[in-house]
Length: 108
Image (tube, rainbow, N blue to C red; front, side):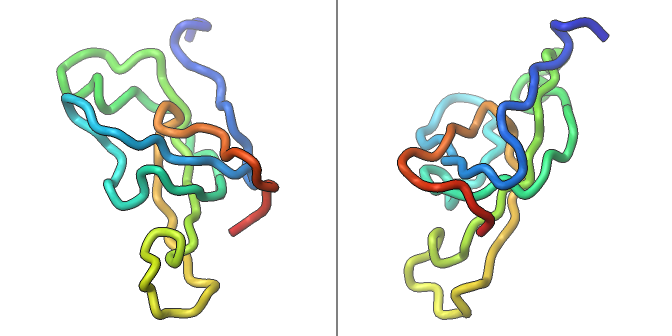
């Protein structure tokens, strides 16, 4: 593997991130309901080819970090009636995440 085959992970477990919003052409791999919302990196799942590129028959390189991001369900669905501690984990690629702004990093 060469340096061009894999991008470094930008986030570590416990860091707060925001899922990028917006739309675009092609094969998008991030659920609509979490776009624009903040969560916490639960773990790095590994490094994989970019699925948006792989969907078009390209090689998916450079490989990108795939993270498991934990969201409080109330942050995703304001009318959620379950316990405050309920969460959902979603696996999201690095290029769909930005650092959260103006908030402390802590586990959800």
